[in-house]
Length: 397
Image (cartoon, rainbow, N blue to C red; front, side):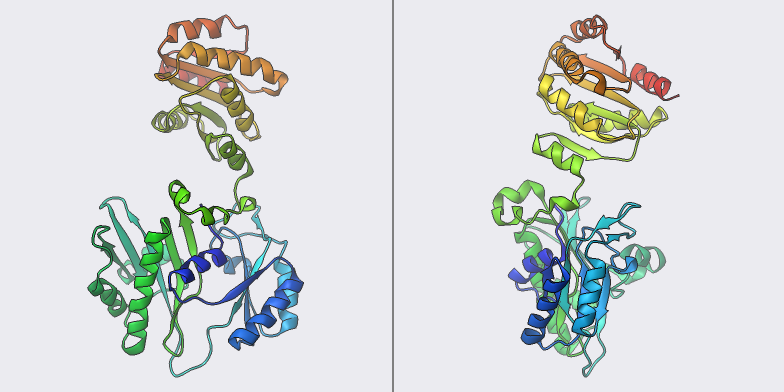
């Protein structure tokens, strides 16, 4: 589950990570009130207006701007709220901005120059250890840094059994070129950040930039946080942070009825039981000259109601030109699935306007094929994987 910047910062702050303070607002009048309150509490007289969407690169799209007066806070907020913000991480049409974060200015003058760093915490699946990735090149796309100057990216792997050790946090601060007060502040920051990552059951914490201020404080100026959905039962308060407006509406609908659905950009919808078989089916579609339009795992109970719901969700995508149903009858009998497909097809009537290819293998597969062949429906029934591939190619050509 992805979070907005302001939500991620709230979690960080709850674990002792120092943050750039801010207040979220959903209209320009509230933005001005937020700016006034920040000025009273922090003394700031400049404010950063940040669009809150689930995507990076907001500044490049005009979603992050500096306001030097309350009148600028009002005008900039009015421009940003409601806009369709396009970034390298959004679709071509962009994402609608429903709220902005009014943040304090932390780039104030002082005895030293502010410096920006990059830092993230995530799981290295190859080693089974948590990994802190960091760089002196903060404020830039980490992908660009990795491509052009890979020697400036450092990693520190942390054994989950022992946790982050003191020498590791000090090594990070040293590699970032820090000393004195800033060195000690960075060590504290790293410990608090790692604690936040582990205890919030997150799959990613990305801070870009981490800022060393002109008076050697270390702050999280941004926060990209992804929580592990499978651990949300341990964090009831985090469940309320979900912003469904930022998620694909078809995926939200599928999730509400218990279907594992991921929307893709292709032209062949697929309905499968089991994640492994679903991945193989997507490969099959690709090899047949098509592109998978979705990942849909209906699970082990592919009854008529569930199949019908799957069809309706797949057909919400106007790009779908064909549907491939690939079910292995292990837990569920193939003839029951076939009957479910027949019932669903009849219930949906004329709403199904694309070819449907059905492959059922496993328990009672022969009976299932006979049922499909005798149904009188415009359904292509096959037995082998290769047959299914050929039919996909045929209906798309």
